[in-house]
Length: 127
Image (cartoon, rainbow, N blue to C red; front, side, top):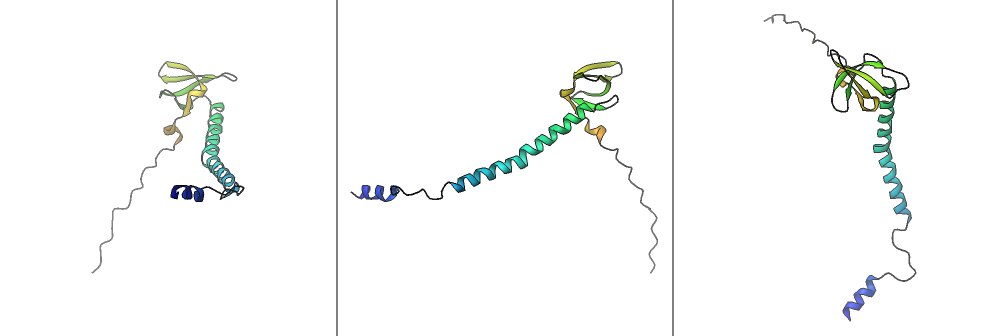
């Protein structure tokens, strides 16, 4: 008998609404989606647009890296084609798809400036 009393107390009354309502669940789902869009989807789209612009703006002499890790310089780009001719070393040239190319970070970064020489001469201390 004691067990039945506990079950009846734990069961919600018929016709009553569940606690918390449905609004809080919808608000949480919307907030989760907004946060995911802000921190995951939006930056990924921005990066894809930048890569597409880079690949469309390729020109002779640009330094690139293929998806396979081959470093090279663009030797020839034809308008309307999906491929470019990549000079790897000396007379070695490869035809690769534009979608497999990335910007060479070493070529994009400016050369480090030489450190300025500090004057080594110090004035003698006066006593």
